[in-house]
Image (tube, rainbow over all chains, first blue to last red; front, top):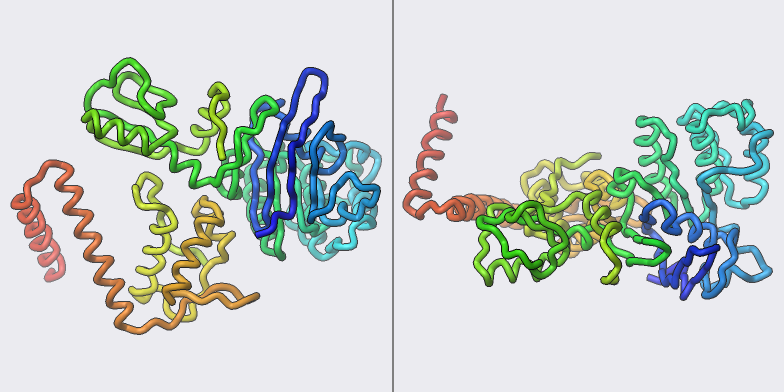
Length: 291
Length: 132
């Protein structure tokens, strides 16, 4: 399928932080999760997709059109939820709704009303008088109701209470099915990633470790409980050990082949939780690039 | 509509295959009669915490084998399948379950004779239950 959004050799330097070079493509019908530690470059990358941060080098193409053009019609196709909305404090929800709906020809008023009701958002209160969680709910309702082809969400569930997080998850799933859509979401919540993501895009210190399909990534990692102690030197694929008889690998096939050849029988082999895999990836020194 | 499906992440069988086999079994056993709606790919992916790529693969295979049908704009439904096909799936499911049980026993160093003994014992117990 033709990608809707393409990033080619994208680079940006801010003070001593270097982002890129980044090459990525995003196909319709999919949800991509941006993963990385604080300061890895997730928000900067998202802002660059919106042309809110200028790139130094490279290209961003939306439906085949460069977003650097003077023609800004591409903005009709994409809505963005930043981590914090700036400049909203002295408006109430109704005013913000008027401002937002004015910009998007795809605005869905009925859907907005529905979201407001579901999240129980008071529209007549000033934005600055809302709690952080309710501010988030309002900005999500404003962003989703634009009903654009592409949705970029920077930490949508931060500050939200647990039932609202669960509800948002269902809302995002339904949003994906409104028509052919593409969603890019930055999150530190493993629950969001497990339930929503099809692909994981992993960033580390501004470098792209890779874009991974969720199950394909999970299938590479395994934990073996062995019947006898391993030699001291690392075995093929090994990324961690606990004691001498528990070993974690990120190249399941190579490790298994080694274990069989050297007759290290195992009592049990188990998959790793996504959270564990992400932790290993983000803590590992960079020497191996994903596909 | 929620399907009673459980994915074993530790299993060496790929996830799309597990999903495919379990949906087939639900159809063959009559728990999902012809015409029943199936969840959308996105919803099922969320419930099972897998990617749409995996779920789509399972649905595509099921559609190819004639177990389900997708109608543009309406969704995915269980197809009308003949009894012979249902019977075949049933046989395969049961055969595989017993095969897995025997393999488990072998991994625990049981001999074939011992496994047969266990099998007989299970049969006796279940027959008694059935009778009472």
